[in-house]
Image (cartoon, rainbow, N blue to C red; front, side, top):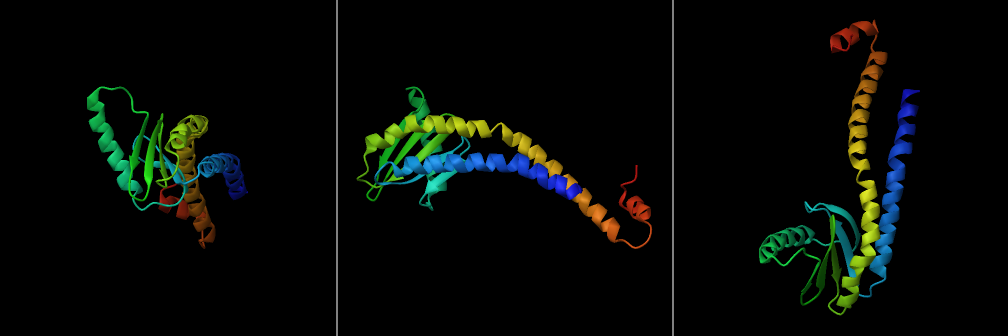
Length: 180
């Protein structure tokens, strides 16, 4: 009975957040598909942790993120205001970085993609980022739930162990230090 209750709690708490995350992923995919030549979009938090990603996988994502952080440290010294967008052009691709607080969007596209359209993505990303922010307050709760679930799972494993012990279960409870 206890395991069924735990399963129901997981379904009621975790799955709605996963469903919302899948909807956000679909919305981000539609944005990516709306720009001819765009191949990848990924969103990071201020620490450079990837929050959401669609499109082609890039082996160089970690170095792109760390390069941006180093660049922002230096451009902050120019005292020109907050960073809104950057574009970098390479032989085989272009990279547009959009600051959509509290997240940063990295858009990778072919050199022939319309850079103006890529910059306009910032406006389209704002409502999506607000949806992501709506999930973030649930994360501490989810972490608390996960740690409680982990503790509860451990307790259930102990009870299962006790059920399988031949002899007096109260002796096993005392041996494990679980008696009141």
